[in-house]
Image (cartoon, rainbow, N blue to C red; front, top):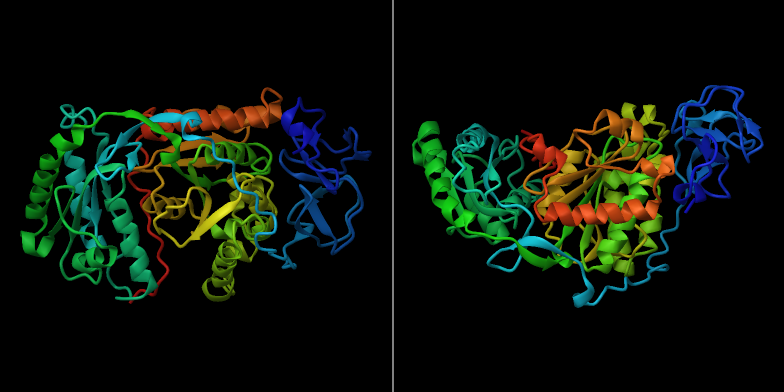
Amino acid sequence: MAEAQTKKRRGPAIRLHDDDNVVIAYVPIDPGTEIPGEGVTTRTPVPAGYKIATRAIAAGEPVRKYNVTIGFASKDVTPGTMLHSHNMEFREFDRAPNHATEYVPTQVLPVEEQATFQGIIRADGRVATRNYIGICSSVNCSATVIRMIAAHFTPEKLADYPNVDGVVAFAHGLGCGMEMSGEPMQLLRRTIAGFATHPNLAGALIIGLGCERNQIAGMMAQEGLSTGPRLLNLTMQETGGTRATIAAGIAAVEEMLPEANAVERVPVPVSHLKIGLQCGGSDGFSSITANPALGHAVDILSRHGGTAILSETPEIYGVEHTLTRRAQTVEVGEKLIDRIRWWKEEYSPGRDVQINGAVSPGNQIGGLANILEKSLGSAMKGGTGPLMEVYRYAEKVTQPGLVFMDTPGFDPVSATGQIAGGANLICFTTGRGSMFGSKPAPAIKIATNTAMYSRLTEDMDLNAGVILDGDATLEEVGMQIFEEMIAVASGKKTKSEELGLGDNEFVPWSIGIMS
């Protein structure tokens, strides 16, 4: 870890590794500025978060950050030159996966030494961090109905049920006009089922139209579900149409409320936490502050027996070998390579998407030149521990420790898969300032830099920018994040919860053909 990350910063730029051929501007730097300790003077203005060449880099030579290749010089670069997409290029290069060659098992603390949080224990032994009633649509055709049912339950109507966090609708735009069998339908069904049976829901109601391709009966059968007091379903064409279904849905939720309210929080081990790891609106500081600090928190969580779900497959591309080498088995490592192979060879060939090199305009403005550089920071959220398992989108996560779930990089879709898989909390790092929230699992937002945190304090829960400011070490911020996980899991409201975010962030991954 770079000295600049754990001690008071020195000068306007940061060296991350002795073997790097760049340093990172901490603040905007004027041309003609000498970079202390590097023997170079800037040739142009350099925005904060951008890279500065510290030696001559020949065209075609790798650009290295954290001693990892993040691209190649597209022209000869002289010392002191700013490096970005105008003089860097993305291209493929060999990365041996070396499966499981660096596997070191996590030393999990004895149960009596593990931290605890105030959780809600369900009848089946699973533990909740929130207590909602959910209404799921099997198809877009019932989306309006479920939204109207949820809207009926205003804070005033829920005043007599203080232990219920709300009634939330999980609407989407799929369920019909799609393949009737195969992976796209299977994926949608396990996503909906994952939410309907999530431990953070005290009860759920699934509503369909009746003639859609995603038949409720087929979904229940695929996922091994059956109706009962906690899981009900309605079909609009059988119930009597829109108004009748809304009325029936309201009545069903009203029957669930008294039992949903009859819960209490009790101390439970942190091993019951499953944390979805997200990053959005990344910038040049993501790999220096928030992401490695979150990774440190994940290492702590793993030692306490908890689970962290790293995702966003396009955003670990280029550094996937750092994960496969830490895999607990060759089979786990090969699972990750298989998912990347599917993305590259079947899903995205010829398309202008992240895994093929380009990053978003916001990432570019924030100082990230390409997906290799973005992935370097993104993977850091997973910490330094072993990779224990790899899951497909929305599959149930049962393996403790660091695991990976195959998802897109689009945050609502990615987090939806993680929550469907059982994540009961989300930790979300951002450099540009992503406005994200999720239900039924709350999202902790972590800023990479103090300037953005100060502008967007109402949206950000924690400021990892203090690492750059020299006011805290990376390890101290990592511990702060771990403590915030415990506080939020115990009922503390996040900024996104206070703002009411999360009602529009249920977005299942659409991978199939529409017809």
